[in-house]
Length: 465
Image (tube, rainbow, N blue to C red; front, side):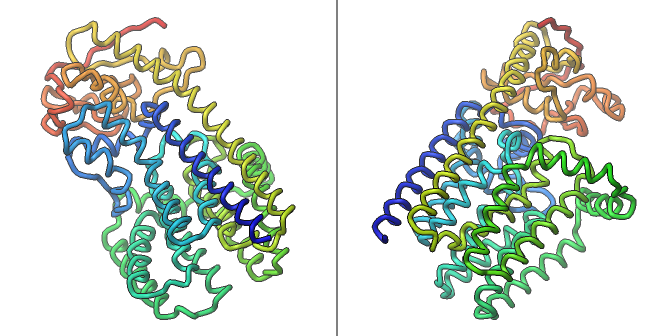
């Protein structure tokens, strides 16, 4: 029996390594598509500041920029920077996978890391720079150490190091950490009460810091959540919309939750089952208050990602240890089929967004035919033939893609919506440019090794596709 389990575990580890190989391939094939929204924004900030960039005290974002920062430091060309950035979002999670599987011998944690790369993500694959994606992997490493039985001083310091970045990543990161600790308390009681005291003190310190240093963005999000709680209309139509949203976009995640409940009950861990169900419900409520809509978008995927984490997390707690040969084989087949299904969804969506990238390249090619470096294009032209439309990061993305040909070829292309947003055009002068829809930046802020922008005015270009 042990030999069969060992063979099965080795086969699963091999499959998981193949998953990361496939993710690496996708990150190379779609590196230009992975610059949408916050992803492109933070990379641009890093390139221009020459240092890893974080905002709102979310220091975990530094880890999302380490490889491209090294590239910038060594003056690598822009295409190499973009490739390193895309690869960073795979290799970080692979490093955590390697540690939990080969250092802490937790194959369930390895399975969880793989699931977190594909479960609940479609458009999210194209915006890989997200605090909670990184916090979730760190949290799996935290849990792997917690359950490893290695509780000497060095491991406690490592766990506190991880907890700092998890807690500061996002308010939901704190909630996710509380859930992980909750499972350990249910299973082991207060065996590590001294460590939990240190963890509580760290949390208290971070909350105090946030209270006195909350950014305008964070204060606004908190106010919006409270407003949704007070004024939301939770009628029959609302719950019909919720059911339709979950059925359409999270059916596979719901099936995972049913599987996990069955595995927990099979182990007769009834307290854990209740904790699991209550956790899912609580995180769903928090996600609903955060968005207030049932639109399918990369933002909604990110908001709902903590629910995915809570649904999948118990799979690393040894739920499958007593399934036997047939049960273990069946679960392995389900796991492989689920990951394969999610890969198909991610790849299909990325191919759709390749049309968007190709359209942007056409716009850039047209802009190169004119004098100047600052251009405006009509939004309606960019969405013809069902091509995914631009968003507020379009000027940033156009600069990156054009700068692949060299800094002398760099152009900034904004849409008519960008240019007219809150009359931002009134702020544009010869010494600045439209950084993104909401912001104007001085030309001196640009890193001259990668971007050269002229002092001319924005000019409209008219295109036919």
